[in-house]
Length: 330
Image (cartoon, rainbow, N blue to C red; front, side, top):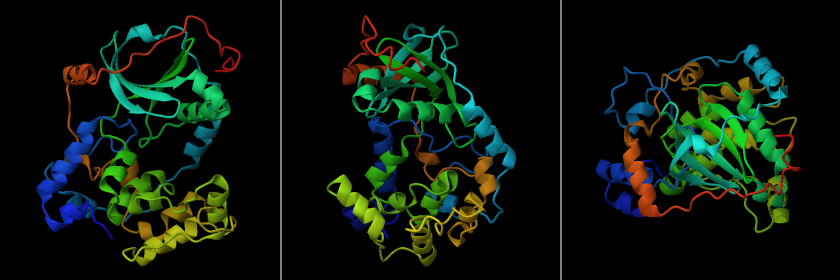
């Protein structure tokens, strides 16, 4: 299995911690990344100079942490209609730079002029949402963000819109995009994978460890056939428990799939592959990300300068709203 200390054939031939440091600094310096949370607040007592190997070896045994109250709170908040902030508009923010691009728009680093606090502003293009028939999908995403209050999930602060865009104002986390790390590092060690998998419990596990999705197809039909009939390829470096959790999560029979029993996500957390994970420590953010030491803090002035160098395309808001009827429920 390719380790986090062997990023490519070039690095494998020259095993050096400095090479790893340079590669990850390169990832964080590209700034073509979005802002999803790959780390948050950490235990101040953990030494800053610990290596990723030392960090991952500090996982401890613990019992799964889950409360019925959290589930009930989510369901209650999901049913509530989210609130559009009519007093907010783009003019109240300084647009600093683009953090990442998406199918329907981009994510911007912004500063709220009133309090000078940095935020991440997700800018969703109405025309593209309508073109790809994704109105309900976007609405569901916003409802979920509005309902979830969890330490491992980005906080949604506000929602507003204009003639061209839907804006989702969120907290800014400068650690980078998880997929950015996967794309550049190609694969993670299993203990690094388990750190992130513990936060999302059962999604992305295979892809984080291999750099590839478990099923592929040149068309939707071929992909569907592969999902329904084929087993995911198992690499020689996979541990026995890792193979087992992948097969259990991708079980073809949904009634036998890991997590589908009455125990729900608790069954996933109790799987032997997670034996060294303390879910309560993950929940309370006492364990730092394996990439924590590589995060580079950049000043707003540096970001402004990079935006100028990039010659980023400005946001252009239409004079009239051609999609008002489509987004009347937002």
